[in-house]
Image (cartoon, rainbow, N blue to C red):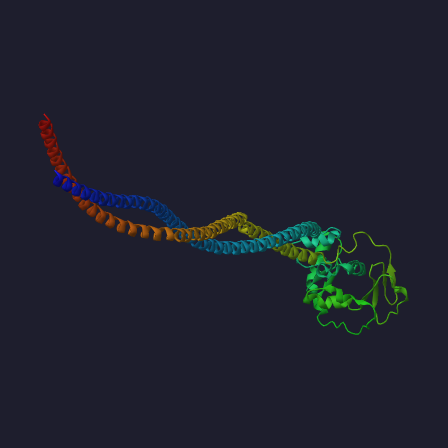
Length: 475
């Protein structure tokens, strides 16, 4: 029994040693596991911080990329808008040049219209004047023609011969062959009054024939100038009177009648009104007539008196009739030309009015206003996009600063996480080692406990046997 007790004590000591080693290993393992769990929590917090930071970094990078893409798109739009603005400005310049050309042409055409209208008014005024002249000349011509054809104011003998086919009825009267300037007609008509009814014939035969006709038909008397008698007439020999107008200088006559004119007027001079005709010296058969016709003075004679209202209308009737007919023809031609000019001017004005393209000017102005507004709108859009790009650039810088700050702020956490991860790996390895050691100690402890329990059972049995034997012995 003692031997069993000693063995039991020895086993108990061994169990106690094994328990102590078991408890120590268990404490070490639990400490390691606690440290591992604490490290895992720290790792989780670090990982969470890193994950949040990574998410923030991704969001920031995505935001930066989005803002940069938007800036790129806006830059493309700005370039496109600037090109469009440049094209619109070129179109605007072209339209402004077109407008200036249209306005210049418009003003030129307006000036031409005003000038043409002024010309038209002048032509119309001139046409009215010419028509008035034409009417006046026609009336004068018709009246004079009537007087010439009816021989108003002439004696019956003259009328008879003019209408008699048996005689040279085309023979002119002296009053028909002289054309006198208007202001001198009264003076010379009064001077030649006694000769104005004379027929002018080529020879004495024609004059004699007329006289016989008048005598035969009892038609009165007539006088004649015979041109053939003036063929050798020399009008020289008359003294020139200073300060007076030679009568021949104011008379127009056909060449064939010039000798007759020289005979009748070569020695005649016209004094201006107010000249004292009676006091003038008269030489070599000269005759002086006052311009008004009131006084006629020769070397030995002086005549005159009052002047009738119709004085001066008898001389040069035939020539005046021819002159009036020619003048009427000229006036007719002139009025036709004026009417043609008026028509052409009206056509020209109509053409100018058609060139007054007010609608084109208005349309061009509207197009200019549209282009100007379009350019302003494009400018505003460009400025808006540029402002947005500037804002975007600041936004990118802000985001980049945030990104840099996030990288910087999470850097320590990343390093800490790496250290924690490495430490956890070390701890995990140590735990695995400690678990192995713990399992070995546990096995030893369990084996020692098992031996002790078996020895204790054997000891208890042996002791029970001894106690049983003692009790038996006591009985």
